[in-house]
Each structure stands twice: as C-alpha cells, then as structure tokens.
Length: 172
Image (cartoon, rainbow, N blue to C red):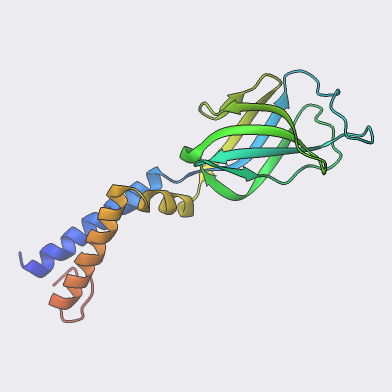
C-alpha cells in the first residue's frame, strides 16, 4: 500500500468518525411546554388581565429568553418554540416568568432531568429532534472533534500533494 493510499484511508476513517461524532451530538431542543401543577389564576398583570408568560432556558451557562405569550391564561399549559435549536446536552435549567415592563416576576424554575423538569408550580417538558448544525457546533469544540478535523485536513492536504492534484481518487 502506497503512502498516498494510506493517507486517503486515514482521511476517510477520520471523516467517518467525524460524521458519527456529529450525529451522536445532534440532539437539539426545539420547543418547551409548560403545564401548571395547580391553577395559576392568582397571577395577573397590573390591569388585572392574563399576564405575558415567558420561558427562559439556561444553555451552557447563559440564559436564552423565549418570546413571551401575550394575554393568554396559562390554563392547561402553553408551548414555546425556540427560534434556534439549542443543544440538548447544554440545557441545564428552565424558568417561567411573568414578562412585565416594570420587571419580570419569577413564577417557577427547575433543573432539567432527562426531558422533564419538575418545579413547585409547573412541569416543564422539552421537545428534542436531530439538528446537524447543533451536532457540528458541539462536536467540533470537543478535543476529539478538533483532532479529527485536523487529521482530515492534514490527510486531504498531503493526499492532494502526493496525488498530483487527484483529490480522493480512492482507486489509485
């Protein structure tokens, strides 16, 4: 086996490792549902109407504020869709607030356990799906991800150099 073939094989193996790593880290939170344990009828805004409820999600140490729902009573619950998926592995805590001009009023908060978080007044549930972009962003920042990306780049570079410009000609 020539040096060129060996480099191509190493690059291909690293690429397969990268794809497998990205796929294993591609779980993304796409929505949060909040269901009250007890009625939240005691929460009213300054005008006595239903408040603007908002959910905040703690992702990798920083709070991500989801858009508030206007003048909708909590009733049996509400659902918030994230504008951008968040990495599931990075979600730590969920918080329900009354979004108010005068200041946000805390209602409940809970740490995520699996796909659920149980607070004192509400239950949070997250929806998870696969998102390739989230997987890439997460995996490439890990030490193994950095090593694989570097190995692929070096393998392709040397393969191109040794192959006289025939990039990934696996037959040769």
